[in-house]
Length: 301
Ligand SMILES: Cc1ncc(COP(=O)(O)O)c(C=O)c1O
Image (cartoon, rainbow, N blue to C red; front, side, top):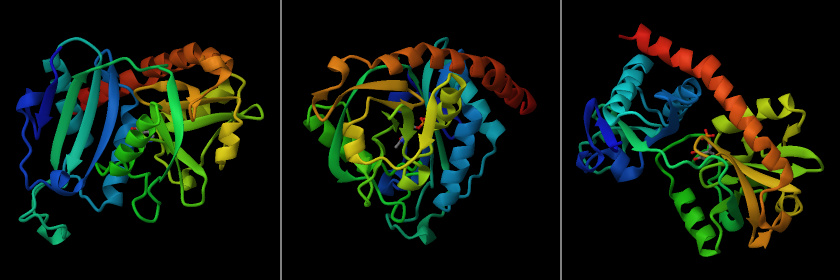
């Protein structure tokens, strides 16, 4: 299983892939991206990831020049070249070359640059997490909306570094109103008074695809859910907490601010959800994502 990169259609070893220094993604984080994992050569949740990429492009005034079928074929070709296995796939679209290292969009005269990174997948599903509430705020929606999955992740890079300096494995950040938002690369769920609560989109978060799946899955197995504002005090009193993302599915939280929750073990409610959610995802893959992906590749030959 090799780590491969597809830059504008050219597949190379990851180490040999090159982006010019005048690329605006390199200069300014002027790019958007998605991360999916594959199961048996099919990217899980592809339609939702593609839809979110369109929203991110519109949010940063980027005109996408390639259609879904072309990108699906590039992903499929890169996965096929990497050989059998399950993969981490990162799709990045930068605004492409500028005439000069100038932030003004008037200098952005190149075409978007499309990169597909395919790497062997380190299994993270269900991996426990230790969380720290940090002082750094999540980007304000009015400044750089966290709903836009842009390559400009310095807010999260620093948040994660600060949490790790506190001995945690991930951070949770508040917004300017002091309400909780999300972790560095995942959404947050907390069990409050018997209800799985997750911050609402208007708290300033990424509309996580796993979060959306959980909002459907949890009621289907008898759990109560709510999208509602959560305070730091509420999180500190939560019966259980977990994070959600495409790579982690559910990551149960065992520690908050260096304090062990339920003896530092995975909480019983989260523990019971893990196999059920895995089954829900496997079913969704089989019934929805796999046929949709095959149709997309078939229709776009
Ligand atoms: C900031 C942030 N929040 C949440 C998520 C989880 O989103 P998803 O479930 O779509 O992977 C991610 C994923 O990368 C993220 O970067």
